[in-house]
Image (cartoon, rainbow, N blue to C red; front, side, top):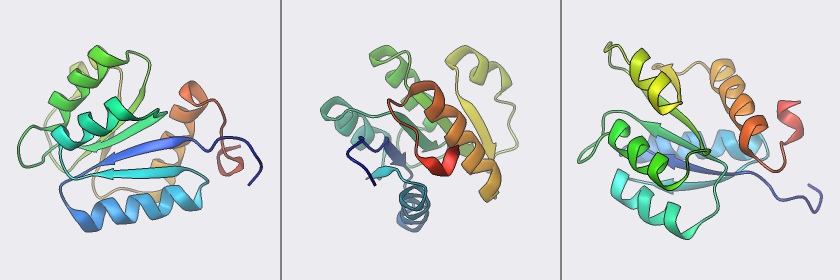
Length: 132
């Protein structure tokens, strides 16, 4: 990779295996991924870092993904956000209000890659070639 800064993605999920798989995929796509096991841990990392995108699960122990997105929006209205869920709940109004992309589990690799690429084109200073 050149001297360009790789997009930084914060991955939030209380399941370690899921976080690891997402981080591995993001690395293959040219991103720098940082893991957080909870909404509270994610907010602490977000305050310390410079992120281009946040990927979060909806249902986690403690505060859920929507709570996290609300907190993120109060800190950075422009940050790209993708929330994924196995829930059948209707999140259309939330996704419009809070401006995030919703993906349903099981995650489809091409849908995830497309959503990440679209979010990075909108918010990252650089977009890896994998999303061109």
